[in-house]
Amino acid sequence: MLAKVYSGAVYGVDAYPVEIEVNAGHGDPSVVIVGLPDTAVKESKDRVHTAISNSGFRPHIGRTTINLAPADVKKEGPCFDLPIAIGILATQDHLPPEKLNEFAMIGELALSGEVRRIKGVLPIALAMRKSGRRGLLVPVDNAEEAAVVKGLEVYPVQNLREAADFLAGKTPISPYHVDLEQTFSIPMDYEDDFVDVKGQESAKRAAEIAATGGHNLLLIGSPGTGKSMIAKRIASILPPMTIEEALETTKIHSIAGVLSSHQALIVRRPFRSPHHTISDAGLLGGGTHPMPGEVSLAHRGVLFLDELPEFHRNVLEVMRQPLEDGHVTISRAAATVTFPCHFMLIAAMNPCACGYYGDAKRECRCKPNQIQNYRNKISGPLLDRIDLHVEVPTIRYQDLSGITPGDSSATIRSRVIAARQIQRDRFKSLRRIHNNAGMRTKEIQRFCPLAKESQEVLKMAINELNFSARAYDRIIKVARTIADLDNQEHIQPHQMSEAIQYRTLDRQLWV
Image (spheres, rainbow, N blue to C red):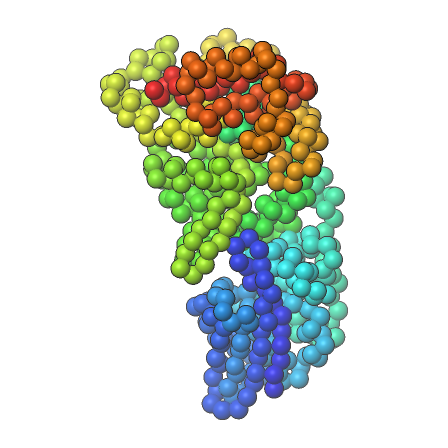
């Protein structure tokens, strides 16, 4: 007898429908799985056979052929255990075919028949809704994640027996619902707050500008000046995520398997801080079957690289294209996939190997060639892609002992949100641009007209400091952000001057 069951599989950040055909015939007892299954899928026949027996059903005795369609796409992981088991039961007249046409299902089976949590449920749920399925059976631990997809009924199942009885009409299961408004109403409270940062007003100002326009930021200073402290608090001043941004980010985390159990959506912008020993595959993503890396896990959030020169040179250089394009394409023999990676790069570094070059209180022990070699670990093209270069000086005792607190993260975030609203209104007719950092040359010419005075300031800086064409565009974009913070339509000369000063450190320190 032949039965057909519906499921889904992940490809990149999206998913596609999979039809599982199960044919129970005569002959020697054996199970054959075709349709390019990987090792985990091939091993499912043993898990499924034992789970069926331990769930109180009688396994089929004879030859069972299982086809996973489309047959020309590699199938990975244990997510097909549940639909394969349901298909086998359907060949024995345990389940009505019309029910199987209405529902799709995913889940890994334990030997006891328990349905275990899997990765990539959200993109699969979106694909099932698009394919016209009425409902989706998922593991209980994945119910919240799948239920954010409106227009699709999500049924959490604990074990194979419960799933089979539900499809047979014996045991009712209520669809799972998630209140998105309540999910997004979580207070934006952070343990790390800018009110804890003493002094460093120029660095905090640069962090606010970077958060407002989505700009990349490099903090340069001696050890103990507060670079990491400031960087770790930038996420607390970013504006709340929209539902579209939350779905994009949650899909990536779900595919990577780093989404928490019973978590519906990621509603706070990610903050990723990989160790400097990370490989290029760990940063960009990779593997035989490509998985997202840190740049994609930081999508719509912050990627913090502490001790920037300590990262391997090849690891830093592979970031140049993602920083420019907002996506990363990984090609392997098995597949070519593209992952989104719109993130803010926040980097921190010392001015030299010992850390005290230019420090007013500590003497630098490095020789000139050691200083130059240390700085040469970061290439000019990578520096050009970082919008703001900020020196973080040694903090004074008066600032440390002062009792007057600075602005809190909530106060700064309110200013950032107001300026971001100006940018949303500006780019509302452009689908792919959400902030000033995303502007290309065409948008810069359209939205950043410069008065004669501002042009003169920029011309003088370009001629004297020999900035690149990329730096020229980024200076204008930063100036546009500063004008938005000041709620001014046109870029003023003093705003252009402030934007220029955030580019001078790369010429002073690296030439």
